[in-house]
Image (cartoon, rainbow, N blue to C red):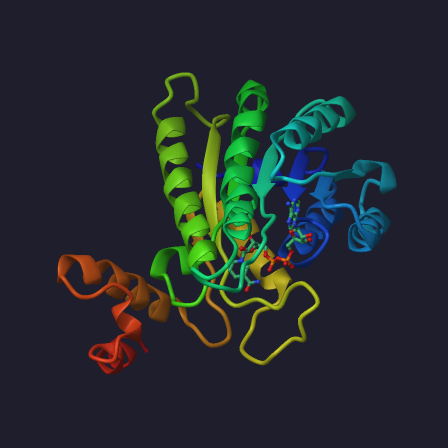
Length: 281
Ligand SMILES: NC(=O)c1ccc[n+]([C@@H]2O[C@H](COP(=O)([O-])OP(=O)(O)OC[C@H]3O[C@@H](n4cnc5c(N)ncnc54)[C@H](O)[C@@H]3O)[C@@H](O)[C@H]2O)c1
């Protein structure tokens, strides 16, 4: 079943975290193809500039792109986002839960920061799905949800425990969502709603300087759009340093920590790191 129809002109996409990075690149590409795009992000100059830039390239003109200030950690603001999108364009065909916050510390970080990371990275998408799903299901055409996860939520590298946990929780919930949707007797056939997990690799985003080895946001967008067209659930992006085959080996290595009764995160354990490096490269 191709989902390419979702991406056609005049359809409507909602993208959170659209001021910068992958969200902005995706909003740009969708607007260029003639979709109506609702961009959501925190209030600020970056968001204003992004909305203006996307309006400037929109195939169907500036009125087809709307910026809605939204803090995705606040369910009321997500409800408002849905209402504004439906009032403006009458339907939603694609919801992309992309907004993210990062906590660069471990168990010494403030609990409030950890809770906020879960509110943005996990509860934001969950509340987003719950808010938008009824209108996606009511849409007479096909519709899709993309939740943006991370390899860190699959292989769990050290250093960012709450970010990794938030993305692991999002992966788990999105898998369950896809299962629920495909088993819903009222959600069958070409016009059903599907869920998808976009997993970027190392990508230059925000205001970071581009380094050799990183991908650019547009390359992630290419994977996402092809993934939707081909109805792939797991859209795992390689980057300039990590190939798809290396990703496959790293994911299997992490799963085998459990099945082989190794210490967790054994890829970074002195007794295993050498073997892991040799096996996973
Ligand atoms: N860049 C990478 O290397 C990378 C790797 C793996 C996964 N990802 C994932 O890709 C997605 C996009 O990442 P990015 O690197 O493009 O991010 P980014 O930092 O460039 O942009 C994130 C956007 O989210 C917005 N945001 C933060 N808190 C918000 C909130 N409470 N409500 C609404 N918006 C909020 C920010 O203002 C910003 O515009 C994220 O889900 C991230 O976890 C990125």
